[in-house]
Amino acid sequence: MKKIILTLAAVLGLTMGSAFAAGGGIPLDKAPGKTNDLASLQNGAKIFVNYCLNCHSAAFMRFNRLKDIGLTDQQVKDNLLFTTDKVGETMKAAIDPKQAKAWFGANPPDLTVIARSRAGAGGPGADYLYTYLRTYYRDENKPTGWNNLVFPNVGMPHVLWELQGDRRPVFEEHESHGSKTQVFKGWEQVRPGLMTPLQYDQAIGDLVNYMQWMAEPAQNTRKRVGVWVLIFLGVFTIIAWRLNAAFWKDVK
Image (cartoon, rainbow, N blue to C red; front, side):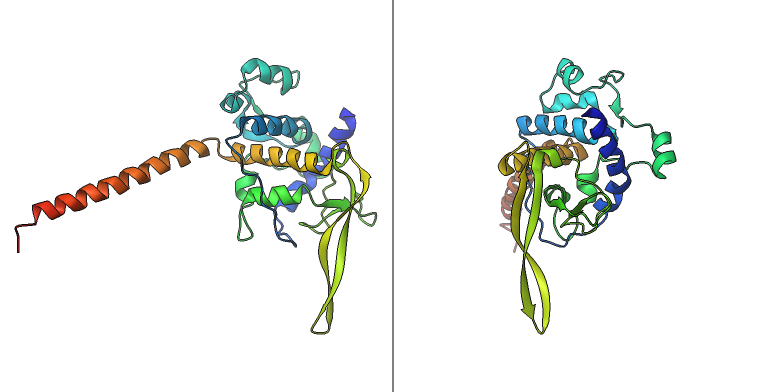
């Protein structure tokens, strides 16, 4: 099973960058956005290490930074480290970069800030990732056997297919001004996965939460401090306004 995941992840590495650079053809679903939910972040970190870190690095994130989401060094060692890794090291891909470049012609992209880099007019980067990872479907006409609604003709395989199972998109034909278009209506489950659809969506939500947190670990502190700064400025504005009125009340 580990070899299968590594093989799929290697192929994923070739196409993740191009897939993340593309726009979506359907409206993006709203990601959970629970970057302060420690249980969600911990589960997301586990999924990231098991399914993403085989091929992709997170070179700007150290394992010991996971203490910020409630994990101890021992828990990180026991559950999230490979044999040769140390807690103080950065999250390096299991695959050798030189071999990856020799085999596939390019190194897999780093995912540290992918949740921030994918933000655009269509929505936050977390929404893109959340929708992208949940809209894979079987397409035997593609080399990998998979396609994606957010990124049509994607070259990246569905590495989480065992969890989600096989699904088929359901389209409805609409005619407007003499032209016919296919409108996405929903999904039909062809073969169940190890998880129910709800469980899979929750798992992807946890993974995206972690990737969103990883892109800026201090974001919750920044927002919290920002609120207090705005409150202080509001109170200070009122005080300054009243002082100004008191100083100039006798001046005509």
